[in-house]
Image (tube, rainbow, N blue to C red; front, side, top):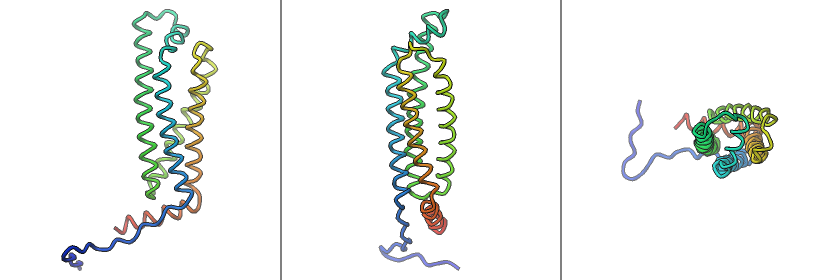
Length: 176
């Protein structure tokens, strides 16, 4: 059978969405902090690009001027594009997890795993970075702060209250 379409200006009543519990709200705030830190990371890399030339020459003393310039440009563009992508993913995950989307918690967890691997690689390469690249310490510190924001968000999203909210919100979405 079918339900008749409501007449006039009446819209069918939608069941109220559950209110996100405190852990989910805090997780979304941490995700917005992660977005801001990721933007700061990209800006810092772009702003300190002049220090890259000496580091590139130290690691590759036979590079021509054109090769050094190409390497500098490549690093800066990668940092900016990667930073914008990271900011977008942080914001998207904050909004979707805040809305209680079941898949979003899993995606956020996978992205946190990728961020963990990236941070470990960055730290392992830090021993190979010479003192010429003074901004390496700041970059690593920002990376650790981004990772901590992600860790906090993931821990909060997998708490019992959060799981209950996500299950309820997902059931309401499926019913709608």
